[in-house]
Image (cartoon, rainbow, N blue to C red; front, top):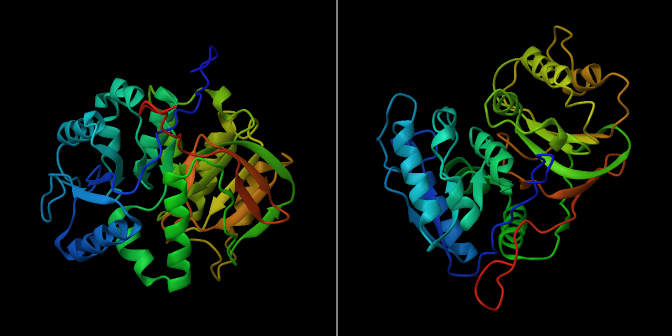
Length: 340
């Protein structure tokens, strides 16, 4: 952390072929009908060159209310994975509604001692934002195991799946900046311009919730940041309201650019009742704030996901419809075997 409280990125060490990644229930349960998708996710990750293990709580049919287990149990399992030197990355099986229950139980000292990539989106956005605020850990807003690697990836065209496999492998194992992310046909320039800054964001409702906790990012962390967000479910009016909350908090006055994901199952968008488009909602709240906005980028619940590493500097050129990672998300091993 800097003296002003703004996080400085804490990069995990790069993964190597054969490293162990663990899929864990960090929020929601594994329903029986999705067990085949989980098996496909394991095969996909093994194809990328990693060893894969399932955490004990990731058991089909195991459930406590809407969660895989009680929050303290999930935190206990997560902390054990953070402390285990053999585990080199943790991938959330799915999202859910549980992370708020154990934000205060996470062993942040284990993270600073041995930072590891944590992959996931949806409810996992809370972990990325809170752990970035508390330790600077670079969070990997990327595909979940079951609906992502074992779901959206499997239905994507073979060329797209190969492109994603290479992208994720480079992100986790490479120590040079990736540069431009592959542009998709859905990308739209909603307001032209260029910006450079640290990438901060996630599911928009989780951004708002994170800022309501004791572990909120200091407002200074948004100075010059490129804010990315997406949403699933709810209504278009909810998106407008969440953006208004960020306006009231002064976040929108501090950011240098915005990247918006493809919305998923959001009611009230582009309906025959003359409802607004997502671009109209965003530009309405931004008002005369002259920042670039790139819309309908493939990350979030619409899947499959382009990875968005929280805390990494990016370059945004909305007119060119480009988003580039200017820094690596991981760091190399030194000769002594420690991260450097």
